[in-house]
Amino acid sequence: MIPQSLSSLKGLMVLDISHNNLSGQIPRFFERFSLENLDISFNDFEGEVPILGVFVNASAFSFSGNSKLCGGIVELGLPKCKKQRNLKKQFQVFMIVILIASTLITIICLVYVWCKRKRKSQLAKSLASGQCRKVSYNQLLKATDGFSEANLIGNGGSGSVYKGILDEDNDKFVAVKVLHLQNQGAQRSFMRECEVWRNIRHRNLLKIITSCSSVDFQGNDFKALVYEFMPNGSLHDWLHSGERTSRLNLLQIINILMDVAFTLDYIHNQCVPLIVHGDLKPSNILLDDDMVAHVGDFGLARFFGISYPHSSTGIRGTIGYAAPEYGLGNEMTSSGDVYSFGILLLEVMTGKRPTDNIFNEDLSLHKFASTALQDHVTDVIDVNILKLHLGGMFHDITCRTCFVLH
Picture 1: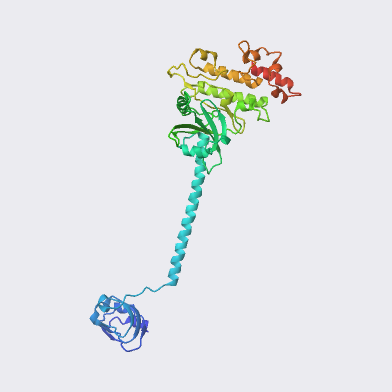
Picture 2 (picture 1 turned 180 degrees about the vertical axis):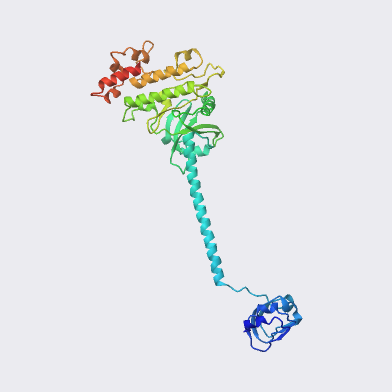
């Protein structure tokens, strides 16, 4: 090979090293020489021919007899050089690619987990704060397993309520109230509820998640309201359902009645605009995990100071709970809600519905309870409440019950 020590001979103008059996690559330092003529013919040089200095002039450079040369300027007519594989460099590139790929996969996994958790968090916040989210008919259909009978938890004149899971990544149940739009007033009830829920927030109000106004797969109008699911059902279930193996004790009853009273105080005196519920009854009072009461169903609600078109067929409350003046066509007022609350209180304490067969024109739930005050409270109080307070608490329960009924 040509020794590196020749690199200092930069002043050479003519160099003839032909027929010397030299091998290796043509040194790059020849490019910096002042060579006017270079002859390397009939040696065993290999590799790429430089393209600067003397190598720019094809007539000044002789290379015949070196079959392993390649590249150089076009005039030389040499073949193109094949890129030699640098295993070390390739390994480094491979490792860099592996590092980048693994980093990207890790980032994608972290983003996926973050998005999943954020989705759960958003649903939880939606359930907790009542923030509205968009849902379709198809989503509600899937959430309730096709509105199956197995998921039906309530049925009324205005709609049916189903239990379901709205988000597949979240196991939290929701209650979906599907309006019976074929019934008179159902459309108006849906709009009224949407309007009311948009204006009220209170710990003892049923929390709404969203609403859906769309069409089903047959092209029929579909409207539904999605609420937070109340695992302990309604107050009506606890009072009159034979499925309940346990009963409410007096402390639970008082707390539930206080929760309802707080709600009425809020909608009558604190929210803007003020609201009349219009249909307060046990089936519209739902209980959460901690037996805290939440008032729902504002389909018949009215805003104070807003006149509504009179309808002779319009429903004002539920028979037995609606104030007597509603039967005469009078407008709904907060006093009517207080009347309904009184009937509710008597029903809870006596265990009797205001529409029981024993009540007729001469006897009502109110008269039934009022005649027993002072000396005969235990004669009308629900026997299940007394059973839960037998023994030393009997006198205390009698006094408390008398106070509540008063």
